[in-house]
Amino acid sequence: MFKITDKIEFVGKIDWQLRKFHGEQLSTNKGSSYNAFLIKSEKNVLIDTVWRPFVSEFIDNLKKEIDLNKIDYIVALHAEPDHSSALPDLLELIPDTPVYCTANGIKSLKGYYHKDWNFVTVKTGDVLKIGNNENITFIEIPMLHWPDQMMAYYNADNVLFSSDAFGQHYSSEFMFDDKVDMYELLSEALKYYANIVAPYSVKVTQKLKELQGLNIPIKCIAPAHGVLWKNNINIILEKYAAWANSYQENQITIIYDSKYGSTRRMAESIAEGIRNKTPDVNLKLFNAATSDSSDIVMEVFKSKAILVGSSTYNSGILNSIAGILEEFKGMKMKNKKAAAFGSYGWAPMATKILTNLLKECSFILMDPSAINAAWNPNSEDIAKCIEFGENFAEFVR
Ligand code: FEO
Image 1 (cartoon, rainbow, N blue to C red):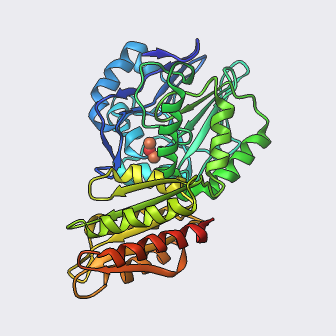
Image 2 (cartoon, rainbow, N blue to C red):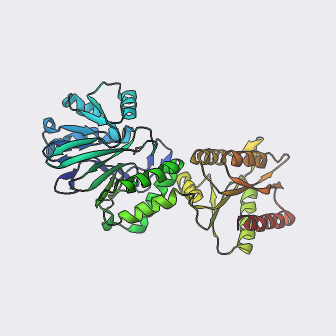
Image 3 (spheres, rainbow, N blue to C red):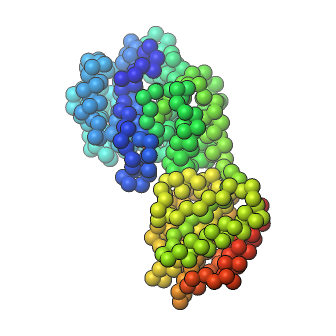
């Protein structure tokens, strides 16, 4: 266990071996952590728990820190099982302990665990007194990224327990941002934002303003995953403000899948055209079938424009491309431009499907929105792809 301050202990779990999260959906190549905290004051407060595989370990460790019967309050910032899985076992041992959560938190916790615990509903501004001049103030953050979520601010140490916001799927035996590689940390924070938080960016902007308006001193932001922000609080707040505001870098990303290399050659020729016109653009190419889809989501989040290509396959598109476009649909991206490309044998179906899907994902399409090449592109097809890339560069410029 780690000491966060004299009064706050980290009682969560650092999960070095985690490589997939949300089932198999999200890659976590640097592991993660399930951050739970114990505040020891006149009243003792447990904030969050851990994911199911670590429940026994969590309770055993917690018992070493405190007689469980001396836990006065449990605060459940978020009902998702990566933070709440230990509640059923823990509340078997201390059944009457009040569980502080939002009204939606009760719904979600009951939905998962089918138990009627001693719930106490809280909302923004509610205060839980835990000592002489010591209290916890609750701040609801609905849809960041679930309806039930809230933050909790502990005034004695000026710590903001921020739930999933400002988190990273990042394992470190150092608890604080000042001890880890900042580039690595921000890169994981961005990947986390792009894959988990981005669809709710409007809410992020609102909540950042609300936090500012509260005018509370924050010496530490303690998210539910990854390391805690202590020395770079302003940096992560500024990053969140920028990421939430239709974020774009000078980047174009080309995503494709290819059966025999024809669509790959089209991708590379389009890239050549883009380079011809805009050599300063950070141009990245990914074969969706062989690349990490969570990394692609992050790269698209950073991009000002994308091109998507697929071979026509049984009158449709290849499944890796269908899968990644389904992810883009959920991301609710704004102000990003796009076009499609693809090879075919006897019927150019892929690009029709791709352009429709790109529209559904709210991309702004170039006119013409797609280019096709039959069978194996010849030199004329390649020249047309280069020209298409040049036109796309102008469209995006
Ligand atoms: Fe880390 Fe939304 O749970």
